[in-house]
Length: 528
Image: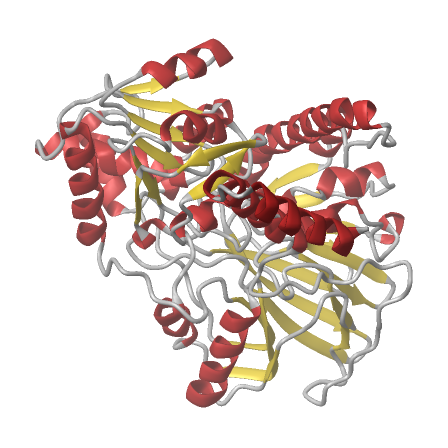
């Protein structure tokens, strides 16, 4: 029995875990790396295993950092079933084709620029055809109904409270006379998250993989009411000035959470019935999936549903369909615009930021985790100037954040979830976090629970039968692209972007031609 860590080991994204039990190999998630360009380049590398050798897949939830590389897996020869909860399979029927279109569009745009430079053309990571082939492999499952995807392997999906259809996995492995119970936390939500039920718990296992996105941090908003009051205040203050409230929002879950809270505020009379635009075709489709599965709602959402008749069909809510409708929002005033992507890496939100960041009456409200090196993280950390689509944009807008919308449990909530776990016989692997978060959570788990912890590296493989004594089996080969050596999450492309902004500012404020030329010639020598 073995487990290998092919993603989310030193970063928050790219979740992919390979489990071997006897002659059977399977994956838990196969996600896309997101964030700095150096990290995203790992998506183009060869898999460190043969996709044809994988018997089946288990998917914890539909987010692209957990599912975005499955079409590439299929492209490279994987043909097995993909098991997930039914809401997740429904969501993936929109998420994966959308991801493929993004790959194709971004590569086409890069190739147009590359052609002018005489640079070799790129190929998309996968195509729409690969995504469609993937959808044929999806197999929807029920919560709490154990099944056997292969002899000697039993799987049970449990509610993780992260997004609609999110699960943690209880997996029983039997190999000869050996038996191991592994729990994959997936991404865990905290208590009081909008719409969906709170995460379930378990009591014992041999091996636990736990996420650590907020392993060293606490959310600022303590309660759902704190979250409501802050979003209401920010919205009222912005709309009063005639400005627009831009909310970079993930199409899945975060958009629906916000619509839900805006509906509550309007219902209470605490927010004027202003126009709310959901400017994301994908968000429009995923919102329909939310309406399809009311049995996953918590008590509060169920009560509001009974009162309103529909959580998302409200006169104030507008879902844009065309690019022209999206462009028209550049002229809007006193509106709330929800647009993806949530980290401002791509999508329509970048166009809105380009047209709105330089306006003092604009407010940008961040409602989710911003990975190191992303445009969203730069804005949160106080950047005065940013580059969007190759253009320099001055940041005059008010920047706000609300951590209470995070779908991820914070440090306290992670430890609260672990409080019900009485026994971890072998090891807790701390994954899905930046190294600082993983180290701090591992320290707390060791101190408070006395469980043995490991912080695995990318592509490390462990012999489960040799635990608790550490047994790392696999080292990197020349074929494998190693994890990038990022400094505080920043890669060389981030530094390059910062340098070009500083250089442009230097050229503007330096009046001496001799001084400008001297500095530029020194820089030219360094890169020659």
